[in-house]
Amino acid sequence: MNSTMNDHTEITQPQTLKVSTPLEMVSGAVLPEYELVYETYGKLNADASNAILVCHALSGDHHVSGVDADGKPGWWSGYIGPGKAIDTNQFFVVCSNNLGGCRGSTGPTSLNPETGQVYGPDFPIMTCRDWVNSQNELRKHLEIEQWAALVGGSMGGMQVLQWAIDYPDKLRHAVVIAAAPKLSAQNIAFNEVARRAIMSDPDFHDGRFIEAGTTPKQGLALARMLGHLTYLSDDMMGSKFGRELREDKLQYNYGVEFQVESYLRYQGEKFATKQNFDANTYLLMTKALDYFDPASEFDHDLSKALSQACAKFLVVSFTSDWRFSPARSHEIVKALLDNDADVSYAEISSEHGHDAFLLPNPHYQGVFKAYMQRVLNEIRPHNENRESVS
Image (cartoon, rainbow, N blue to C red; front, side, top):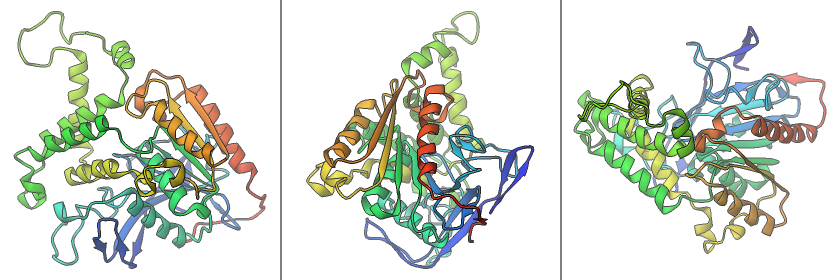
């Protein structure tokens, strides 16, 4: 296990899995070897039946709960931990940084073994299926025959769907939160504008900015500003900022005058500087989102795509989420019901837009915790726990 307890807070240390089995990717490219960075929380029981895999969203990573060595909280600490919706006193929780990421797993910032230089723009385009196949290698390494549940929000929910399609016997429950069966044209358009902002930055250098000793901070900041804008609802932005000015009167110039402008600029600057997110990773992740469309292999019939899924499902949406609206979750639920699947659905009232899946909400917390209790109840009782195999 990689966590200790300090004042009831888990202090986590990442682990690294080195995979020497080549990964044949959907694009036709092959990664001869790769590394996955991951964290675990809680203890794996004697027959490895209490394992939960959490799949992260676009800018997420493996640090999903507790605090790291620098005191940084996990991005979903409100819902994962002792006594929380995903109770680490009961479950063994695993979260890895996706391939192509920039938080330790092999990606554009890694050295290409064939050239000895960083991959940069040469890192192959990823898809959700590629991520799932690499995560399956982690499952085998941890000697987990079947996940008790897979859980993911947004892009993470798409990975959960892909798991249910590609490895139906390897998960008992699938929790799909604030997700969609494919991106709308509008969402693809948002991603393209974000990519163009990055690629048009003079410091981008055709993706070889690391060799050039630069960072396309301006482009990254603009991409994040656009993305963040789509994660919030109009009502939320109105109640939080309205038309409030930074100063008492209009300045009649092109500086930052409204509080909402200041907020977006801050979010963009923080992402590009303090969080130091890799620009090539941002391009890669958004492209993987664009490509996700499992029904395309089944005559564009989502019901057929999910016909082999045998997991039980919880699907959750949020009323003010206009990026992945409840209507998109309804498509998933309908396709599952077409196959007589065991599916529960909750539509949560929230003014927080797409970000709602990350934020406190009593109704959401209650639904989430109740469903995870159902998952726990189906696990055979054990008196013996064991540490994770690594």
